[in-house]
Length: 150
Image 1 (cartoon, rainbow, N blue to C red):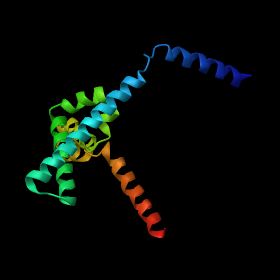
Image 2: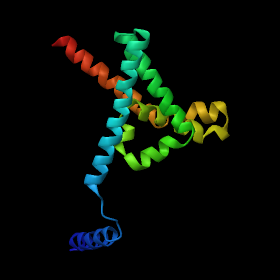
Image 3: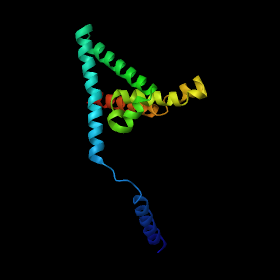
Image 4: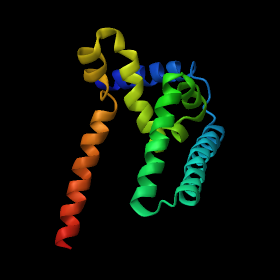
């Protein structure tokens, strides 16, 4: 009887808490994420065309140059506080591209710079991006091993 009583109170409490939640606007959030993510990718493609035509870059050099420029722009906008405002409005659209990765490395470094160069910036820089890097390397290695045996 005690367990049924707990389920009843849990359901009532959950309903009470949800009564204070504002309704989520899924379509609007998805549209914003799509538009901002698409805009970032369009900027990357524009940079690709410019570097290809102006400097004659191709292949890995071109891909590397575009990636470096986008990482630089993401870090620069994070430093000026602009990328955080973009992220508040765009959600996942600003996180998924490579600029979001640059933001996830630069934000903790800026936040903890008052603790010093080593214990602040260097130690906290990968607090958000570190697990992503570790998981990415692990998943890439696992896929590579599977691919090797196929």
